[in-house]
Every structure is written in structure tokens, then in C-alpha cells.
Length: 349
Image (cartoon, rainbow, N blue to C red; front, side, top):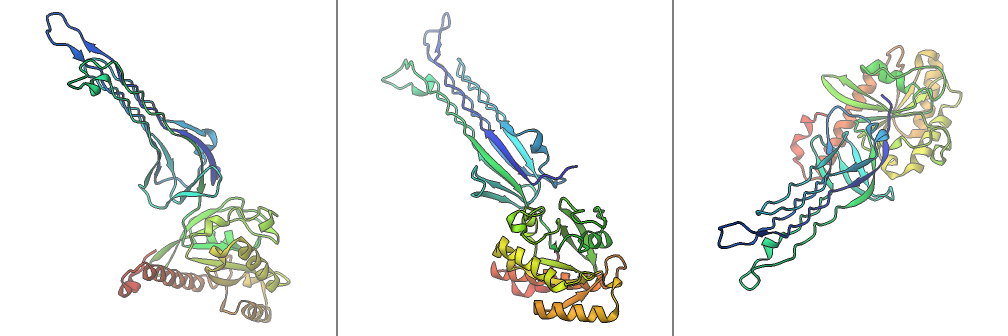
């Protein structure tokens, strides 16, 4: 299945049915009068979050969605049938934006959420509705209300607990494959990963979701390489895992390149907690390990872990550090929202 995280769709809700002008005329019935029914209501356009989807690929092949119109009213006080709604099914983490592509209308983050993005028009009143003591034979009815027509964007931001950052070939996909059942493509050339991948990782009986995105290069915020188009998929993460290729000649320059690109993307990522890891240490001598780790610790101002995704060396230590950071971030969010401070130890991702 191809990955698609941005789609432009055209929607239109149903128009309401017209009211009916009708009079009761039956042989041997002494009293007649108006009996025109109301028009039916037009269908809504609804966006619903469902399970089992992780891409917007369905909207590549169909971009126009029109709800049914309501039927007009009929004689004998019969109301027209309401039009059927049309439902756009999207994955968890979908944002709905205006046509300008910037104004966010809704952020759908839970399965089962429903958003009426375009309401159907009301049906018009039939002439029976206008009958009064002084106007016993009204000869007018209301037309149905027109539906709403608009253009929207759907943008998917995957929901994960950990987001992987690093230059191409830093070992992000290898780490995901070594710690989860995900099977991303792995090769010894840059940009092997062309679309985000998700994997469920477990450590100490706690599971969390890791998102692997294509590597960043210098100038990504200006569109170089694959650009920063996939960084939106790690915006929702609690912590970022920054992998640096230990076999690189200048690990500090590699570290600063990613920090620079993330900073240019915006504060939403620049302010997130990061766990920095020197990867591929199985290919280094002990002296090289110590030297490069010390240089990274001086550049980052924090702890730098050593790991090898291939040899699975240091992986458990990194996972435990991630688990601790995720728990701390979730606790901070809960506390900021006014949650119970005493429940910090019962966190589960």
C-alpha cells in the first residue's frame, strides 16, 4: 500500500427538498384545504476516524464527495425523504484544514471521532405549514435550503510516542527493525526510507510506538533531499530519538546539522525532549567510542548513549531511557491539564 499523508478533497452537502403546494380534493369530502408536505433535509458530509487505516491513499483516487439531496414534499401531508449522509473515513491523527492549507478546522486524534464538515440544507415548508385562520388556502411554499460546497485539505500526522531523527543511513530503520515487528527497507545507500514507518516497541512490559521518517540532510528546510515534509509525523511524539552514525568522520557536525534543520522547522520540535544516541558503535574501536561520545556530550550538553542496532548492543538501555522520558512527558502534560499528581507512577503509553 502506498503512503499518502496529504489530500485535497471537494465536498458538497445535500440541498433540502422543496415544499409542496397541494390541496385536498376528494369526491364526497366536504372540507378540503392545503395538504402540501415539507421537503426532506439534505445529507451531511461527515468525517469519521476509523481503525485499520494509516494513510490517506483512498483520497488519491476519489476527490469529490457529494451527499444526497432531500426529496421534495408531496401532497396528502407527506414529507420528502431526507438525503443520505456521506462519510469520509480517515485514520487517527488526521487534521482537517481550510482551502488555504493553513487554517486548522479540526484535529482528529481518537478512534470514533466524527466531524460534520458540511451540514445539509433544511427542507422547505409546504403550503400546509402556512395555513392560518385568515389564510385558509395558501398558495406558496418554501424552496429547500441549498447545500454547502467547499474545498478542504486532509493532512495526516502519525501518532507515535517516539520519533526517530537522523541523517540518511544513521541506522533509524535498522533500530526499528531490531526492536519491533516492523520491516522497513534497509540498504546501504541514502534515502532508503521514502515514507514513514511505525513500529510497536516493548521494554520491561511497557509498549510504545516509534515512528521512523526519511532522513534529513543539510538544507532540508529549503526542500533539499526529501525536505522536511515528513517532520509533521513526529510533531505529536513525546520524545525524539536522535541517532548519529558513529562511523561518520565528524559526528558533531552531523549532530548540529539535524538540530539546525529541526530548529528551522519550528519550536514545536525544537522544544521537545531528545535522547541522543551514538549508533553503529560495533564498528568502532574503544578509543573511538569514548572520543566521539565525549565530543557529542560536549556539543549536546547532555547524556549520549552508545548503541548498535545490528548487534543489538545497548538497545535495551536506550529503550529504557525512552520509556522514562515518555513517562515524564505524559506526566507533565497531565499536570498542566490539572490531572492528579499522585498518579504519575501508573503511566502507560
